[in-house]
Image (spheres, helix red, strand yellow):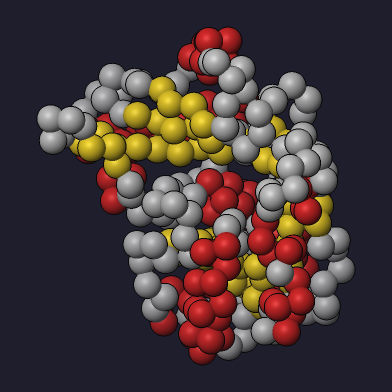
Length: 281
């Protein structure tokens, strides 16, 4: 596999010397975060040691943050931002030498607050290229101030997200059935931004009417991988196919819904749509 963003991994580097990046998700509506899994895959692909922490289910502890050269916190919503601000002193205490980055929709919108709190790098919009470039720069010993843009809207060359470092799906929000049973739920992000410019929406100040879609093959591979991991908890399951995705869009009353629900044999997979139109990548 070619290394994304022009970063070349040293095949002879010792694993003990790998640069450690800790990715933290404060809160994301009870679902397993694509926004940890996607950058984790890209960072691992170019030789970084990556540890993921989901504060909805896990705690910050010394062992997790020990030796981290980069701590990056995902701010996908207002609640997550408030939790991140409250957690920042402990992050600093447990990883005093780490470069602190915050990324995601609310990182750009809260630039002044987060800069005042000492956050060194902020990445909004399509943050993955900037995050990989930052980690590469830090690994090379360059600890200078942020160079890249605050908001990047260029298209990301995603690879299949790596969810192996996250808590198992059974620990996240699940569907409770009328008879008292339950089904595991999963989540894969398909789009970011929106073509609309609604004045009340927090997406608009960052994306400014721009819309970005994750490649279909990446979405399906992510679902299939999550599907296979859930089989151990709920027996046989099948992945959502491209035909299922296409049929849902054709039959939807809204044509381009913000969320789509599929009903595989044993696992319900929730596919998020941040925009109503999937027409222009």
